[in-house]
Image (cartoon, rainbow, N blue to C red):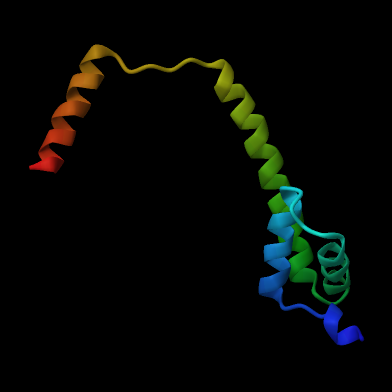
Length: 87
């Protein structure tokens, strides 16, 4: 019965990632919690992953308020570089 609750570290990180996006099932979350009892590395991974997600979301919000556009000179330089790659 308890063999079904054991997961590998690879599976734990996958469930962690799914959990952040709300895609993990209740069963997966239970397996992950049980895995954390014996694996502190995966627990740390989850904490760091959550922190990175929060930082990214905060940064993404501030980027949306800033409008950044290339100047005409930058656009022309980019076109030249892209044409060099095509040739």
